[in-house]
Figure 1 (tube, helix red, strand yellow):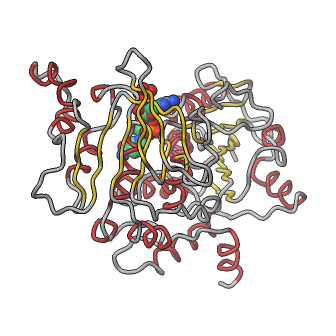
Figure 2 (cartoon, helix red, strand yellow):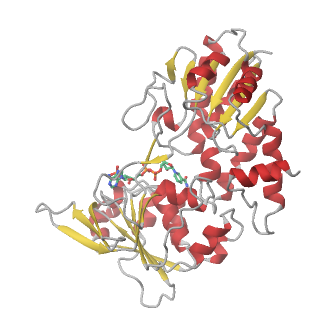
Length: 426
Ligand code: NAP
């Protein structure tokens, strides 16, 4: 068998790399090693459950996984045991594609308070990530604040105000669906530290906000004035034109029960409350006298970007990004995707990185008579670690699809215990 490659992580960057390697003239044996029992990373746990057309890219990845030269080792975390050093000793080359799964720190007081969540926690919770399924955010209050002006902020806001009809046909976990539909949240603020024309929302996402069945969208007072020059000169991109079409106050005749308000030029400086959040204090970034304003809230979600988690023996910068030179970390060790370049871009952005790393490997890696897959199986058995194979994942996948109610594409497994029980009882 040809050159033996291990890819650590199984999100889009991992699969685009595998896909590109399989297109090369050289024969590759590719093992995808993943800490969770399921592949596809951000597609399964990050992409919003009501964005099924985006999630459908997993079908493309499934075809790559089905290739006879590809195997899956789910449930195996590469950190200290086994370590990157262990994996490098077994393969001709190793690619780290572990993404960025930690919330960027807001760096203000009181973020440990009850009612404060990072977007990673909240998004993983509604998407059924095994490590976050017990988050149980208290949604009994009426007001939520979301910090950040990116698409993740929009996803969190949209899920907080979605109706039953809008959650039909999604693969949201049942517990999150029940909690969100019974929540008391009536008002959501989406708050940016810069102006409306600096927001990073994209057109589709901002348009979706305007189409919500039971939610109005308003801009905070003064927003349109701050956009007026660009509006008059017709210089603004589509997403800002949609934003500028929102009124500055709720229409009197609206019978919608929820409201999302976009506020700008505010930076959070203090979270107030003892047992749980009561208010958030913001600095007004347009005011030269350090004026602050306070907004009452019961829930705060910080959606200000992601950081990488450290892997023992791999050099990272202060944001958890792996230090690399054009995707090369060191001899035979490569990195790709968010962990190599930072948390930007959509799923398809990773295609290019995958193709680049595949070319680098093809041009530079020679077979070393490495033990590869058999060596990994031996190591895992010595370490007494049980892994989920590709065939087992396909059975899990089939079961998730079969047991879903008619309108839902799948009912996810959310714990290793349930997965192992299922596999042991087939
Ligand atoms: P993002 O697009 O980088 O947005 C992060 C936001 O947080 C920015 O508005 C940023 O403001 C703000 N921010 C950063 N630090 C802050 C601080 N200390 N205080 C207050 N605000 C702060 O990141 P994201 O929303 O996490 O999305 C990550 C990537 O995934 C993006 O490329 C996004 O497009 C993609 N994504 C796509 C979809 C989709 O296509 N549907 C869905 C979700 C995510 P500044 O601009 O001032 O830095």
